Image (cartoon, rainbow, N blue to C red; front, side, top):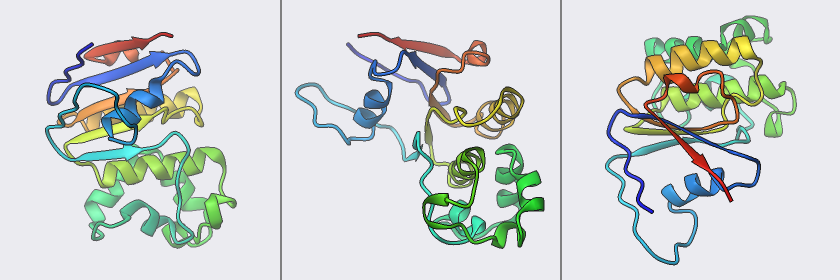
Length: 178
């Protein structure tokens, strides 16, 4: 089957555990070997994985990653990822040193830092693999409205999720079965 996603579209991908949602993303990213067909990507991709990947360095360096620090862009990414309260309570704020694999952070903090990195480094296409699984409804709603539907509104967004409370805002919903 063909899947064509228009520039600027917000697509939510739903399906049960093990249905192939993450495999679809890996195919788009070229990480799975294809037996047939082709994949055409019209732009650069930013990807935020299902399991937050963090470096053993400061919060700021994890968010900026390979990009030069830009205060305005950084502040907006942190706000939209609902990280401001965390930055107030972490000793040293954004200079807080993250332990290996984020062992000194909660699951929600790790995920929000990963989301902030994707926002800060957002390219033409932004792919999120279940980004709101580690956050509660209120935080998830805030992040979706401010980040995915707000800050990234001019980007093409593909979001794999099992959270259905915001899918009515999607331009398109793809359901994967079997």
